[in-house]
Image: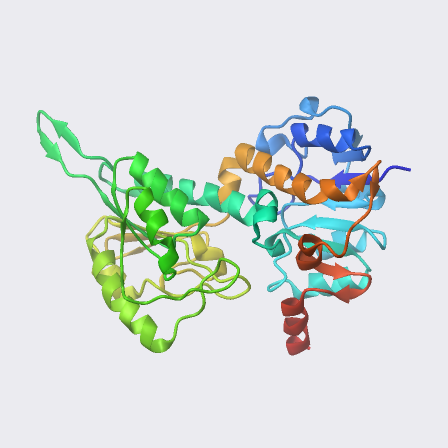
Length: 376
């Protein structure tokens, strides 16, 4: 019997993405898998049911959860959904394991194998599977559009009969995938762009996009493509230089995050108070606590005459393309293990080994296992 790949209609608030788009559903079917989709799963992402071919349909989530051998998700499963899965089911999607301890325990106790997309290793071979990067690119793009929409100024320089309009100044903090996309988007809109990252290796990437790199004299090269946490002395030195650049910016886009930890606080209340009236801060890291001291996830805080926007789940605001990219990430991860309609996982493959959260009644991810032990 071929494996059944299940797809749910996402139920989390404001989640409009779908884990499987028609193009990728056809690819899984070509590998011999049966694809079972809850009706309307792709509707919010503008993929109506009629576009899906070679798939079976379920009238509710319960039928999908009961039948799935492999379940594809975007947002983490709820406890009730985990309880409806049969032992041995393979779930592939985001887990947010650092914040959802009860769900991780349910996955473990239910003997569910969960591959967490945020744990996919950042190695060259896994770039096509890296959902963090694909969705971060969308967030960086969207953040600049939000900033432009909230500024009462033009982004580009304009020469008009009424005189010359000076371009807006944009500061991007964090030059990972989201930050680089924010830089590129702001430059396309004609803004003067500066960018800062604690990893000095990003300097050339920033400059290649036409932005100026803010050098604070502090480097925090980390492992796995991420930055390490700064010392108190380094933070103070960084802050002095950054506060001056924040004060000079019309829009600040913050993107700095450390996986599994609260986002570092980089933009202080005092720094916001130095910004010009009408300036905007768009904080992509809001869901991890925010890079700005004033950020509230999902809200816009007006402090003085400055807006601080706690942007959440920006990828869902471009659900069509976000779903396309995410579904391809899932396919690229799973397809090497799908042979003749059967799932055969190579546990010696570092991609599967490192992205595995739970398997066979155990928590496999070391960091999550330690967090659970500390909380018990």
